[in-house]
Amino acid sequence: MTKSKGCFDGSMPREVLEYYLSHAVSAQWITMSDTLEDDIRVIVKTGIKFLGRAAGIWKGNMPEEAHFARTKESAEKIHAADPEVILQACIFEALYREDVENVKVPLWVFEAFGLPPADRCFDYDACLFPEGTKTWDCMPDISKTETQMWFYYRGRRYIDCGCEAFHMGQIHLYTGHDRGYRGIGKVLGMLREYAKTNARRHKVIFDAHSHSLVVNGKSLLDYNAMPLTRYPVLDRPGEKLVLVREGKSGGGVSPEGVYEKALPFLYEYDNWGGRDRWAYEHQTYEERAWNQWWGGDQISWFANQDEEARNRFLDYTFKWTAVNNPDGFFAFPLMRGIGAGGDGQELCYKLNNRSDACPCGFSQEDEVKRIFETGYGKYRVFSNPSMLDYGGRDEDDPETGVRYPEKVVLYGSFQPYVGAVKDDSNSEITRMYYVGGGKYSFSFVMPFAGEYDFAVSTWGTLSACVSTENPFPFSGTGSKGKLVIPKDNTVVRVTFEYMKDKIEVETAE
Image (cartoon, rainbow, N blue to C red; front, side):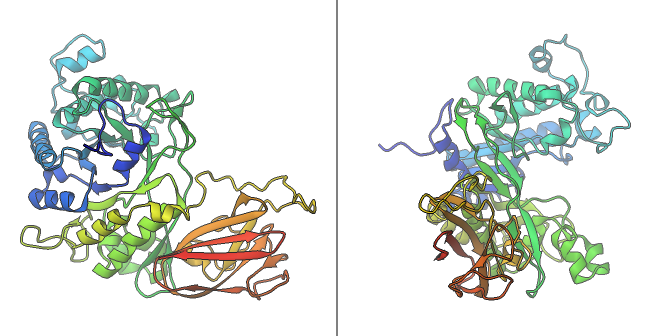
């Protein structure tokens, strides 16, 4: 019998972790879903293997014990349908008095921290930063023992419910006083140790909103995660966005004990409050475009597009991730709150096809199934390097001795659709990567079909440019070549050979 790619017990090599991340979704509070049976149908049908944000409390809406009982019951139902699925729980960067002060500190928490037992509840005030610290009023300080106890308590409860992964929120905020990340490192280590005996498959994995959390060469996280960074497009009808790469995933020795130049990275459409109604009533089209990128959080913008546009943007995000980050994956939205400003939409986005079983579905499960079946490999071959080091330094052409340029930029009318300024010959966003032998390459995804122009700027100036239209170097923004994009979401790779002034364009749909 062939061993499943998702099989693990006590250890999770990178290829197994990437199997889960390549079939990941954001499934916020799915353990509390009122359409759980239909959600499970979608999970099985599409091949989803990782349910991000499946369980958690931002600000509690049910008693503590009822929350964990419901989480455990839902997890058991999901695992009965597919035992491979990983459920991720959340421990966030915000605490609220009503959630903390009503919970008795269990004996096992005192024992884990080597403290004498006491008959008391968790102390909310003892979890916070000192007064006068410029943080949120509800921000926990992980350098404090009480906060560590709370995080550990929550983590163990979720492990006992069947969760095997944790999202740790905006980790760089609540570690502001945690010098050397000793506090958070202690808590994560304690939960990993508990999982060795008590987790479903004797292993838990951690992520947080971070590009890197490495101490003495070792990563505290199994992979890094961030929301997608986007950029408004103003010359198209409606509300259009393009995605822009921001930073890279740091490397280090993984929790598996393997050195990685770059750890895996997971992108998502984030939520934090829905649509800004005030912006829609009082701001101009252009002002709203720049106000949190169309006046709201990411998932609310997405949910308020029509079905065709949403499908197109899912396909675009998937291809963009494959091309812009060879270590990256995208957590497709399965279930995500869209706040109170949804302009008539449901208050929760759900991937499910709309039906009697899920009347609030947004009908995109078939698109995600198609994308999962396509897989990342088809577009990874076009991927830009994982390391943001453009190279080309102090290297000469072996035949002529001519020094290769350190900075080479692709510019033209296509640039706004990849998040840059039109005809910006000095852009870092469309800077080409040196790939050796005097060649430079840059890949991107064009979200809109059409005809554009482009050229190559050597040394990042307009005084020494090359194009497919002009056989001789030229200066300025004229004489650019044509870039024909046959379909929306076309993947493009441009390769430039410096000494021969040769430009090659490859595309994939």
